[in-house]
Length: 167
View 1 (spheres, rainbow, N blue to C red):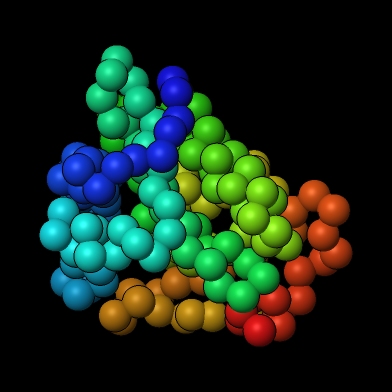
View 2 (spheres, helix red, strand yellow):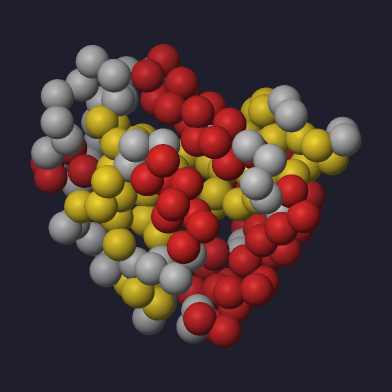
């Protein structure tokens, strides 16, 4: 199950994985939050330059995806998804590891993310990977509750709120 950086030409496939991964949770999102969580290929192309996008492959097809954006001394991990038919195969762990390697390589001290409290399998993955909840926001996405998780990277001191806020 290789993980590699995606190309902008794969935006439609990445959008499809996001849509398929989050569709079972649609009733728990507000319509606006679901739309923000499952951006269209066009929206993904617009934000491609904000930071790298990775994909994991299974049988030559995109099975998972994640992207990252710099926020001060932390790298913000976003749009993490694994296709429902590929879950439990290590895609999520490999994608998180790709983000962490990139963060270390470019000098970030921590990786942070926001998630919804009802995405229990994702939260369990993040906790197994060493992420811990923080009291910092954001508290919601378009009316859907969120909380933040952070992981200090090897060689970094404990993550402060100042680092998390991108100061």
